[in-house]
Length: 590
Image (cartoon, rainbow, N blue to C red; front, side, top):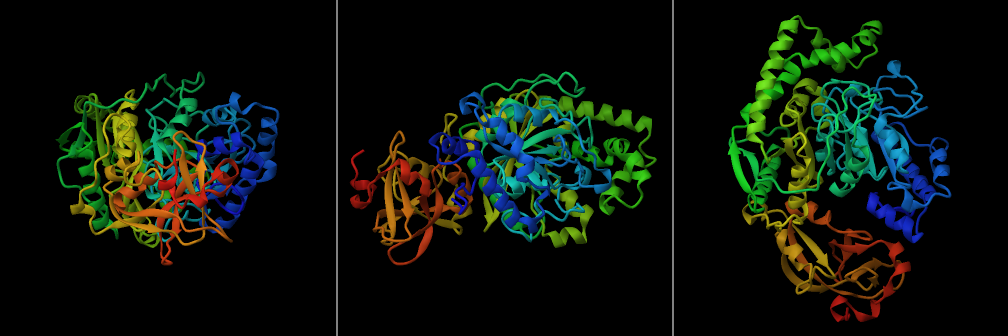
C-alpha cells in the first residue's frame, strides 16, 4: 500500500473489495494515481496524462449509482494514443497528426458504459509501427522494472502504466505483437482476441485488415473481465464480426517447436534457460504435447513486412506523410515508405494473399483443438542498443509474434517467471480464431493449476542456481491446505524461524480464514513462521495466486535479515481480528 492509501498494484478485484468495504472511494484512487503519474513523469509513459478536470465528469457520473449495477464501477483504465477518447487529442505519437475526436472509440465507450474511468492517453511507437517503445517524439518509454531496458512497443505506455500502478488495465493495439511484447517485458498479461472480436472503430489504422485492440492487466481474470465487455459486433465497424468466447477448456494437445529456438540480446542465455524451464513445466501439465516444425510460421510471419501488408500501412498514412515532410519519426517514416516499393504490385498482392491462404489452411490442420506455445520474446535490448540498430533489434522482437494476425489466431501472453533479477519472462499461447477458450484454459492451467491438473515443480536442473527464500506464516506452511501450492511451484521447506519483534498478526474474515502479517512502526511482537525456498523462475507465477489484501514483501527476521515473504496491507487491520498474542498461526484454532 502506497502513502496515498491505494494498492501498489491496481486490479479490478482488489479495487472492488476496497470500494465495497468503504476503505477507498474512486476520488482517492484517482488522486493517488495522479501522484504516481507525476512521480514517474521521467519515464515517458503518458502523452495526455490524467487530470482532475478531465476525469471529474466520470467521477460525477458514478455518484448516486449503485456499484453493483456497473461491472467496472470506478475502475481506472488507460488508453493507447491511437485509440479515440472524446475531447482528448489523438496523436498516434505524432503531434502534427493530432485531431480531437468528438466521440469515444467503440471499446472505450463500452468500458465507460460499464462504469470504468478513462484516465488519459499513453505513449506509443509512432503510428503503432514498432515493437520497442522508443520510436516516439514524446520520449522513450522506460521499462517498468529496469529503466535501461526497452519497454516493448508499440503499446509501450499502456503496458508500463499498468505495471507502475497508474491503471487497473489499459488498452493497446496489436497488429504484429504490440499487445504481447510489452506485456512480457513488464510482467503482465497481454490478451489479444480473435480478429474482429472487439471493434476497432475509433482506432487509427496501422494495417486495418490485421489490427486488434488488446488489453494489459495484472491477471488473466482481469483481462477476461474486460474481454467480456469489449467483445461483440459493432454495426458501423466493417471489420467487426461476431465471435463468442465460451468457458475455458483444455486443448487436446499443446504444440511446441521441434527446432532449437534463437535467442538474442544481452540476456539471450538467461532467456533460453527460462524458456527451457517453461517447456519442462508445460510437458508436466497433463496435456498431450506434440512437436512441430516452427519454420512454417516463420515463413508466414515474413509476409508482414517483406510482403504487401507494409503497403497497407503506407496506404493509410501516405497522404499525411507526403503532405508533412520531416514531421514523422525518422525510423518510422523509413518503414512506412518501404510500402511504396515498386515490388508491391497488384499482382504481388494477390500472390501473397494466395500464399497466405494456403498457410491458413495448414495452420487449421496443425492447431485443430490445440494450443501452440512460444516465448513471447526471444530476448530484450537496452534502449541504447536499439538506438544503435533500430531496425534489426525491432525485427528480433517480432520473431515469435508476427505470424499471429496474418494466420487469424488469437493469443495471450502470460508471465512465466523471471529470466534474471527484475527481468520477467513471458510465453504466448496461440489458438485458431473462435477457439479462445483453449488459450484461456491452458493459461489458467499453467498459472494456477485450476483446470484439472496441478502445476508441477520446475526441475532443479534448470533452477537450482536461482532460488528465492520465502517467509511463510499461514496456510502455506507445512500441514496446512495451501502447502500444495508451495510444492507445485518447486519449493521446499528450509527451517522454522521467527520475525523481528515488530509485527502484528491479524485473522482475516475470509473462507477459509487466513492470517495477515503487518509490520508496525512502533510496538509489535515476534511471530513464528517458516522459511522455504522456491525457484526464481516459478516465483512470479506463485505470487500471481495471492489474493488481496495479502501480498509479497520484505519480512524482517529475528536475526535482522530481510527476505521475501507474505505480508498484509494495513487497511485490513480495520476489518480483522488481532491475534498477535498467539505468537503464530499454528497456535490459532480455526
